Image 1 (cartoon, rainbow, N blue to C red):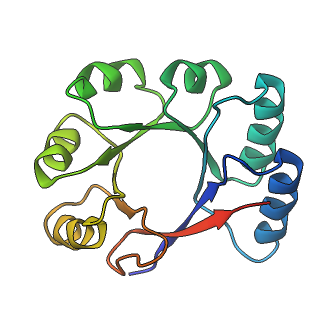
Image 2: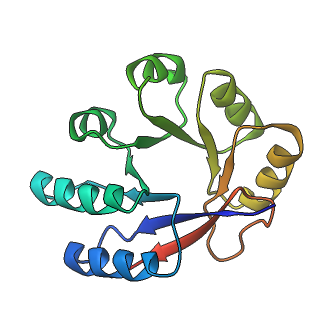
Image 3: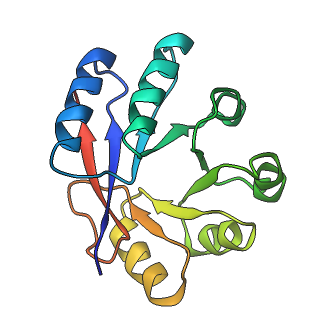
Length: 161
């Protein structure tokens, strides 16, 4: 299996430095996605970074803010599991929906509700990723960068600018 590259922007890093680091990575690789946490960030600067990322054919995924993702025309949004996944899926029909789950049950419910990918980031992330990848076709991301499961569909790389 060839793993895709999923970048995670450090929420505390300088946005200009993140942009430079992203462009540097793109000289040798084509990332599949970049996860960006918009909390406390200037909307115009987010838009500028979003354009830079999308211009490199990389999906710009906003963390935790469905309305802002839709407003900025992000490629996707990543949220924590909630029983309201079906409702959110209807709202986000035109963009990708990633769901962070803490258990097998949450992951199966999110997958059934239409999540485009499932993520695990708890202490059991590697174990859950292996289990998921053996049974399901919906992509899975292990968000534990210290010891990621090789079965994950995406390799995580942190951008810290």
